[in-house]
Every structure is written in C-alpha cells, then in structure tokens.
Length: 193
Image (tube, rainbow, N blue to C red; front, side):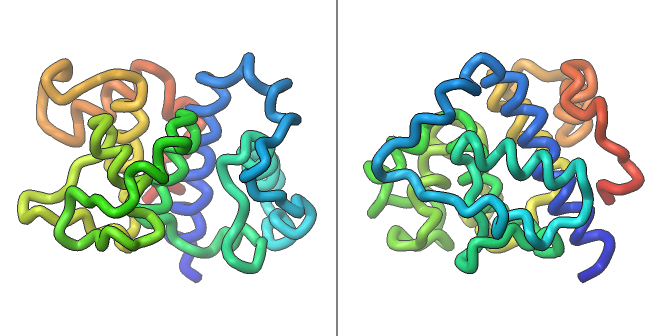
C-alpha cells in the first residue's frame, strides 16, 4: 500500500483517539465491563500487523473502549484505507450511540446505501444526528475513502457545531474550528495528505 493510504489510516485512528480521549477520559474504568453482545477482541492479534508504537497504542485504547475490533481476520490492517462507512461506525460507536443502530436497520437516507448493508444503521444514526451528510445527488458513497476534510468535519460536528454556526466555506470553516479546539494539535499535516 502507498504511504498515503497508510498515513490516512493512521491519521483517522489518531483523530478518533484524540476525540474519544477528550470526551470519554472519565469513562475508562467502565471499559473493563463488557456487555454481553460486545465482540471479544484478541488484542495481540489486533495489533500484530502494526509497527508504529503510537498507532499501536491508539488502536489498543480504541479497542479498550470497544470502538474497533479489527477486520474479519481480527487484525487491524494499517495499510487499508478508512472508508466513509467505517468512519461513520467509529464515530457512532465513540459517541455511544451504537445501541440505536439495530433500530436503524432496514432504513436508509441515501440511494446508494442498501437497507441491508452492514453499515446502514451506523450511517443512518450519524446522518440523523447531523454528523454526516451525503452528496447533492442523494448518495453517500460508503465505500469511498474518507477524506481528511470529511473526517475533521464529522469530528467537529460531533462536538456540537453545525454549518450555520461556522462562518466561511467548507472545509476551511471546519478545519479552522478543529484547529481552534486543538483536535488537530498532534497531527502532522504532511502525513495526512
């Protein structure tokens, strides 16, 4: 995989980690108590394909919060790109809204997200909460790579900001707010693109 895809995957995880660490810092002790329907994660296997120490630590923390659990083989796959649907799942799970996902199954806001698609509930919840938007043609493009601007926008919206609260044009308005709120404080922008 290209350096761009590796950095995009790492970038997305670090952004989510920063977001989750800020919002859920006091919830860490509760993470030890797993619900019955939560996936049991083999953490050794999950991080077995990650070489970067910081990325490994971020992934382990996200796994502790039951936000990520790896791909079908149980590994993280740092060389894979993060898709829009994967980022929607990570965001919804980070905000503890994933219990409503089952209720969102069978319904879709976007013409290219089948109601039976694995991510339909996550996308529906995120769209319903105003965290994500589709494209003007009514599509969501769930399998497309999430861009830096899209990821930042979703994170800023998760903090409660809406388009009408921010002056300027997208994505500059969301990038500026992310900088102001220090969401991007430790992000190396040369690595993000």
